[in-house]
Image (cartoon, rainbow, N blue to C red; front, side, top):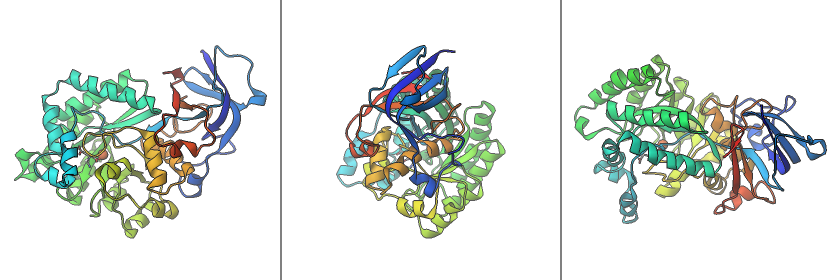
Length: 414
Ligand code: NIG
Ligand code: FE
């Protein structure tokens, strides 16, 4: 197998050795440290990390050598929550919000998710694939190496299948690692306005079995929120998903605290996502749970809403991941470095905490932490290389700069 050597790395970040390793997801003190090797080399064989160390021990040859010339090397970002497959865009709603309409108001008027659902219905599978492929290539340039993709703009069985087939095609053809999630219950379609039980039934009795049968998703999601789906409905959907091997990763506490976190934790959810509105009881529930809290600060940034109480959660020992939420409504951006900056600026996370949340904990939120999210011998070589920077904090600090100069996925330079 061919070898690739990276040399003259100013800082090799997020390293793990036999002697120095932590259980994932990381929480509390383990979030605050970010082991690294200064003035380092790293050797890749095939798609995996073979070894690394200080330059004084650098191997003399390899099939290919890249002189990193003082750049910093990190694990590629693990973006564990996106809606990357969608049709078109919604900048008219963006302007509506500037004029004073709220996100929820727009949704009540038939815009929002229903707007994207109409566009998706009209788009062919190939067209959707092309659009999503371009977004995937874009986020790769920001340093993302693994990504979760949800359905949820279909809202009919056929359209949800169409979205997930596109996501699976992306997974087959892309060098990124991709996990997929069925979000059948994302919004109530207009046709079910007066019989919501029937829609929940459609999700449970048709979407879940069919998606599981065709192997189109690993996870089940539901938008648990006022005017969307209740805790009882979310719980029924999570239970149904679990019966078919789909583990819950749900949207909850974006605008209201209704009990979605507790219900998801009880169901052994892999993650609960958003959490802009969280109370002490919910923080207590999460601190002792396996479930990861995935924060998506680009969403409240874009919607001009308030941010999750991340500091309280971190200090309580909750396991936190950071993701983009890339979607056409609340976050038309898949830029992980900006998420890191927001995490530091708005959530008061330290750069170390933010990088842990965007790498190893993001990997854990996709059940990929054994393969990705840190620099460990034997793990898949998904790496990003920055231009020379003075310290790690420079990454979230320089929030407008493009510091990612090269991306290596599965051992291949992209
Ligand atoms: O995560 N909140 C629910 N779903 C998406 C937004 C969907 C949309 O507006 O298109 C989110 O923010
Ligand atoms: Fe989302």
